Length: 264
Image (cartoon, rainbow, N blue to C red; front, side):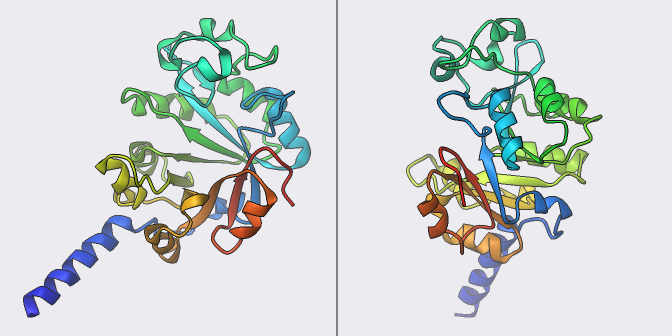
């Protein structure tokens, strides 16, 4: 019986060690706390997601901006969500396998807007509102993506924090830029493979030690998400598509990533 209890204690201790977030309370969490964050900018039928007009609209409304960064085939950084170009540009291709020149010849869905570079977005936003930057890793390019984005941000005067589904991104920032506020993106992943299930349980926090956790609001009741909040991670929910969804989760999250409506 004693060995059984000791074993349970050790297993629970290991679990806590794996899921524990950062011990600090990063001051830049204010970018998220009590805030509405415009998912890929404030986009609609006239302003495509992750476009300069969508970011300008979010600035005018005073929202924190969430955007996504990819590394192109020639080592440039563009702001684009999907891995492939099909949905937003109506053509075949993978962002990481395409040069910046080829990407610039395309237009975002139902518009004349090109895919913006990260530098172009930073110049336009110019610190007017905070940024939540999501890193999109492809083919194990974590290090070159992080290094290139970091180099571009070196002279940026505005406030920003970073997040990713990929714990190695947060590990890079933890090791190389520990002063930057970092967040782990996740979801329940109940029907995915074993690695994704572990990620949904936030067991890779041992790698990332995130300051905040951005979790699919549909999985708000996940016990590991709740535990991570109790242990100190700021809880952020994504992606809310109505005021009703936000109101239903006021007690679960302190930051709200939204799209498709104007939150109250």
